[in-house]
Amino acid sequence: MNSSTNPSQSAHGHRLFTIAVWLTALSLLVAPFRSSAGLRAAALLVAAAILLVLWWQTKSPAIRLPRGQFLRASVGIWVVTVLGYSLLGPDSRMSLESWRGDVLTPMLAALVCYSLARSVHEVGVWLAALLCGLLILAGMVVFDPFQPVTGLHEPRYVSVGWLSTWVVMLAALLPLAWLLRLPRSFALRSAAAVAAGALLTAAWFSGNRIVWLCFGVMFLLYMAMNFRQLGGKTIARVALMFIGVLVAAVMFYASSAMRASQFPTANVDAVSILQQDNRQAIWKAALNTIAERPLAGHGYALAASHEALARQFNEPGFQRIFRQAHNVVLNYAIQMGIPGAVALLMLFAGLVHAFWVRRTSSAFARGVATCGLMLLAGFFLRNMADDFFHRHGALLLGALIGMLLAACDWQSGTDELHPVQTRV
Image 1 (cartoon, rainbow, N blue to C red):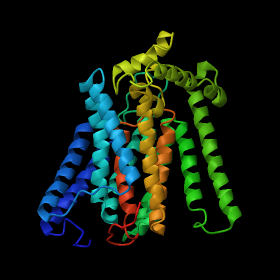
Image 2: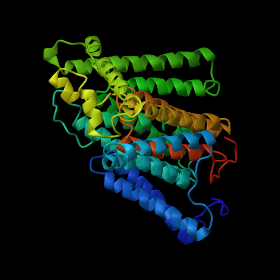
Image 3: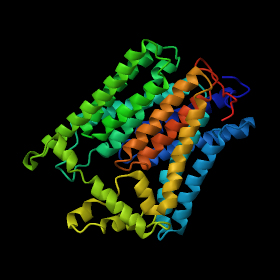
Image 4: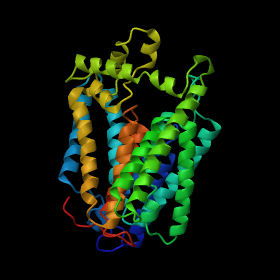
């Protein structure tokens, strides 16, 4: 790294910087597993503290903020909106605890990863940690797959919903194997092939159907963003896009058929089990719940929000099961009213804009920005049918956004890389 821009230029500083990188890797490694909240948060806090120490020692900023007025404004509005509703809600203590874990922790992960990702070497360490975690997750779900008929099933990977969300986010990183120029690029691409196999395996054994739609949309987005750069005849590229969509549709149908086969006495198949999905009824009930308190909401991350939705149903069984809207935007609106939902949409709009404007910096930045857009598209689509924008999912999202934004701001895709001074 250039010593004029690297706060870890001294031997002591370099050791501290390396420790911060590995602590961040540890946080990413343990994040998808049960009872890891304390360890992952502590690792990030110590990494942030090390950056502050480096800042104090070198008198040069070791913690950097991503550029972009719209990005900073949208993130700030989201943070302040959730904080305001937490403070003014019916149980500020409980809401603030969730705000700390669901807002501050992913913000911390984003800032730490953005500040530490100075070259491909730091990113390589984190990708290795994520691959190790993915392989463990894939093994767990193979030996302990989703059991829909067992209501008390509590796997060590938290739940198949969390796992499928994790898988969708990691899938956005696969193109990095061809973008990052590490000394052992063949090994990186081999690891990417292993990761792809683990992603598909975990997705299948999770029994989740939406994950295949996410993969299809992410693949289409990648193809559209790189259509001219892929080479070959136009008809071949179009055919590849069609094949990708077809494979995603087939896997969606097959996953639905597998889910139906797990209810032999219900007399359902791949189509009828989709027709019997309760989400339309839940979303209608969610809209009615929002209409009750469209501005104030029912309380951020409080049981009162779940109870308000449950009251929309007459059946005791539905009241017991349907306690969240299975849609992140509707959940935000139930908890914080329409202003909360608008703040959430502005956050994602700001993140999309940040990657979109960075795509023009260089060919390398375009590739990394594509990964960022795939990440956001897949995560948002996954959470249109459920809500995993908190805890494990939010932390990984924040970390990956920080890492990818930092890579977009590198000067090139080669060796020791420095931020590009571009107007975004």
